[in-house]
Image (cartoon, rainbow, N blue to C red; front, side):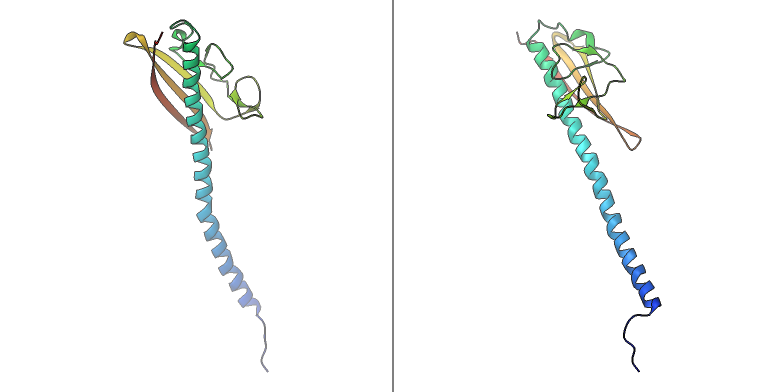
Length: 154
């Protein structure tokens, strides 16, 4: 008499094969998810660094040269609402508002810090601006830095 159906051993073997297949697919997608998260943080850091330089340029355009910029040789912090630079505080993280703007005073805390360093670059009419954005990813410190020069155009 022929019996149709699966035995218990066949069922266990099938489940084991499917489990190995699912684990293989999952392990292939896990690094992709990690890379995606890392890249999103790096893109945000690039944006924050560029914004830091734009803030410094805006302060330069609305103040006498180099007023407000010369005190930042050890580091300053600023956000888009500030009209002057404040001395850098290592404990200050940027916050993000519901509108998507980063500032120090309101919004939800983020993992990003921004340090703006301004030094004289030879000529009295040239300043070197370094913007360093720092964050932590899985216990590993990450950073992104841009350097550019600011000229006295007045």
